[in-house]
Image 1 (cartoon, rainbow, N blue to C red):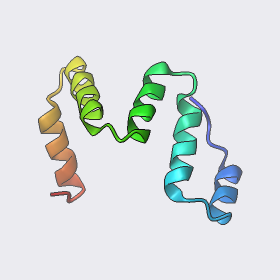
Image 2 (tube, one colour):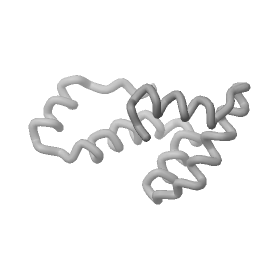
Image 3 (cartoon, one colour):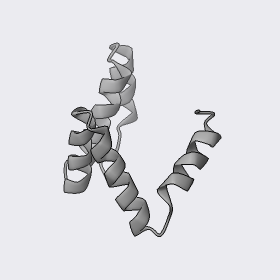
Length: 81
């Protein structure tokens, strides 16, 4: 995994970089050597929500978990309706 340099992070925040761009930069750095993560980030950039949901459902199924149950729990934890 690509380590996040705290000083670089502080510099980016101080320079006023958009938080979304900052997060995407970090994720892209971490995903550059992982084709699955890289493809998932491409889906995010292209706003392909249906494909992202399909990915998540397949991932949870491969872990023996129910996506709908886990997502409902996630939303409840963070107060999302």
